[in-house]
Image 1 (cartoon, rainbow, N blue to C red):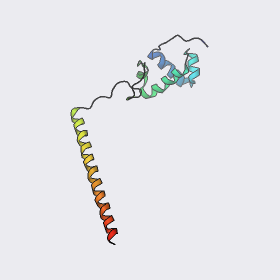
Image 2 (cartoon, rainbow, N blue to C red; image 1 turned 60 degrees about the vertical axis):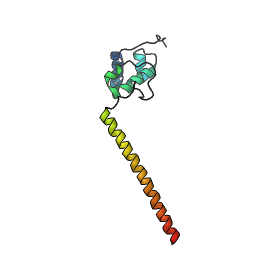
Image 3 (cartoon, rainbow, N blue to C red; image 1 turned 120 degrees about the horizontal axis):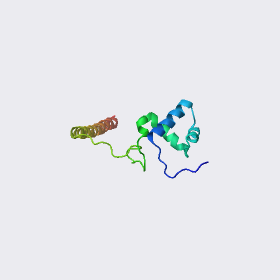
Image 4 (tube, rainbow, N blue to C red; image 1 turned 180 degrees about the vertical axis):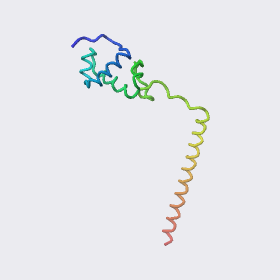
Length: 121
């Protein structure tokens, strides 16, 4: 097996060519890696997984380093909501909390009434 160049980078065009050839000729990851002299077949598997999810453009994105925990494979924080949407969500949360508190009290009152009726029978 030929020695791999350390930290070899592949262009988006090359990745796209490998994936499309692999799909067209129904090659396995190992066969595609051998044909295009890619040392690790797992790279081909990764490219093949990205291709249907993000399209060919996804293969042109440089993915180095560890992905953030919040976004999975996407780096960075999710976009912030505009002020109005954020205020609406906060108001809805407050309304739902009040509704839950009301229902808990109502349930406690009904339970107490049922207990009292059973006691008097």
